[in-house]
Image (tube, rainbow, N blue to C red; front, side, top):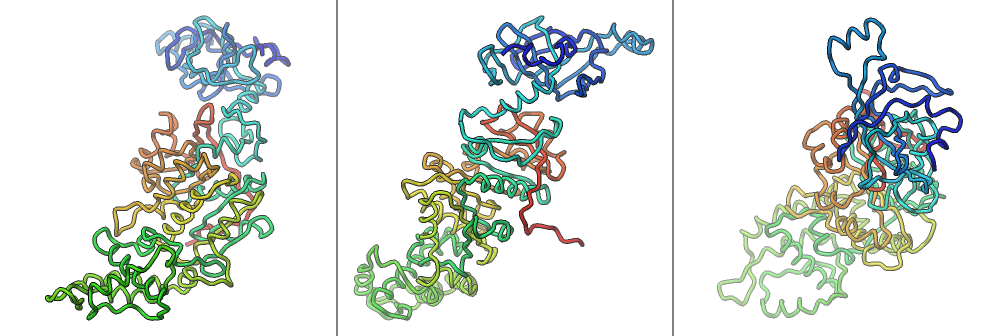
Length: 535
């Protein structure tokens, strides 16, 4: 493609402003012919304002057509400058503009591509970008080679005459997508707007909603809905010991071991057909250990309602004779806090209904299995029915993540998890809750699992998980530590703009984009339960 083909409706000389005068590795400087060329003008219904920054220019080079963005405009400050302006002799003032080269299009290309090590040369002509160049740039913004159709627009460009943003699903999700922003910055609205376009495009989506914010956003005929503890259950035997520890938020000292012993004892009771807890005090140690050893890997179910009582029954130690268990008041005091936590959790009726082998209700893992192997379906899981506990949410996320990773022949899908900071570290333990989530971030792409996460604070997300994120939609953040956590994903200019973003405005940064882009999110028509009440 030649430069003349980009200016077929108007002579390109009307857009000419100067020549390249200095070339550096990271940018170039152009000498503008005179100050009058930077004045506001209208050419063929286009309004050009070149005396500022953040606008596009193109450079006609022997290597092709380079696309640049102006990030600095200056004129030398002197008495001559003021005299020239005061007396209307602006033709004698020679401004300079600093240009960041962001793309190149050779004579064989049909769109711009990353310039890599190529750059412009001294004395090459610089022209203001017209609407044709702008459209060519927008067509070239995605660097992926995917041939898939673009999704419907979910935003407009803040600095591109409010042009609509239409991107391919692979551009957003191929390296996972993370939406971050402070409360009331527009983060949830952005997430729903993108989800809306994903579902309209018939892309498989699994939605985990810890707050119920999206419970009325999707009609039943489009998305199958599960309400945990109401119409969906899971057998206690499907949970690993690590997940039980997450669930009850055990500390890293003795509580996890005591919980494991109690669950093992209840599995033995279930195997023997007993409907009560196992009393250990007064029993022969060798005989009891031999009996408990008969519990096999297939003996997984137990009566969870007996768990507090069984934990109390684990408050034992060897007697002085060494062959009999006896009650230990010290261990009883140590275990009392764990008993309180488990009792409190089991007081949640929906939670008890969820951890239950009820054949009349839907089984969570069966529904997940059906979803990942069935084309053109979406699944919504409402976890808010179990309460706001981080332990429950962390367990559910870990359970689902480990399950989907263990499956084969998965039909690719988007895995949306709202408020992912809820599944981070427990106040009782140094262990991270989202090890399963981190595994999905690392290994999920090759299986067709693409994460879509939201959070209020990037600091609450594991650095390991954050390191696997290739695309971020960043809304307003105010704390320096929060901005520092995402600094590696942004250029210096974008970092300075994060605090200045208004509600609904964001920065989209991705390894699949030619450069960071500034967006205004378009609110979709789906219902969302996130309105802030008036005081």
